[in-house]
Amino acid sequence: MRNLLFEIAFDGAAFHGWQQQENAVTVQGELKKAWNRLTGENPNIVGCSRTDAGVHAKEYFFNVRTESTIPCESFPVALASSKLPCEISVISCEEVDYDFNARFDCLKKEYIYVFENTKIPSPFNYRRSMNYKYNMDVELMNKAAQHFTGEHDFSSFCASGAEVLSKVRTIYSASVEREGDFVIFRVCGNGFLYNMVRIMAGTLIYVNNGKISADDIPHVIELKDRTAAGITAIPDGLYLNKVYF
Image 1 (cartoon, rainbow, N blue to C red):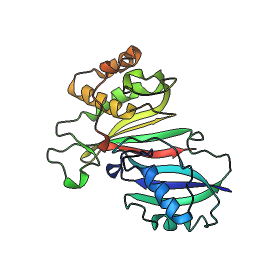
Image 2: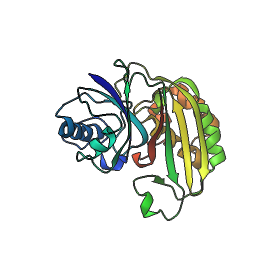
Image 3: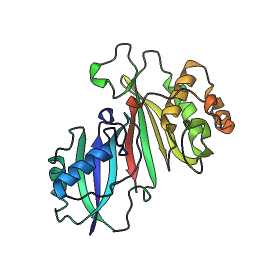
Image 4: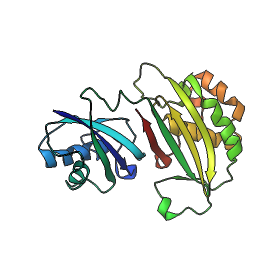
């Protein structure tokens, strides 16, 4: 029995999130079907993160224990050839310790949220960014983002329905920068709550619009009240960008 670690990337617009569901197309579900076609196995595919519907991943990892003898260097092409949707790319495969777990051995993750800051959105960015046609004060938004860093109870930035024992998370870095017509919110932490990054992004829009002061972010955090923060930004602009083990 081998334990294999795969790196993949996917366009989340085609899927109802990562986790397998009975009546929806998901990333995990499509991987399981392709794996079964290739090896005849029905494995437990363990993902590093539970991404929501419409959310993308530039870097994503999963591990799976298998009896298959397919060499690691051959697995990416073999798996992709087993009717895996073109929206999922299998980048690499390596054998890891039997006890390795892509979810629990993940130390931190970096997400980015992409705003297309143009009056006329490009059709090529549809469902891959959030179009925002008004002026964006990147310096002000970056100032606000700095207040996210540190260990906090992020209840104000968690959608209802989250089933977690604690809403305390540590954010190591957060920033906002412009890259041409795009404004990028980048945040790295040891874990994230349900819709947390999208609510952070929506709160930065509120800061930009003057509905919330940049220096009010600590107070919003302290309130532990979802209604104190901004909107939940659409999933289209959210990417899991980097995973650290």
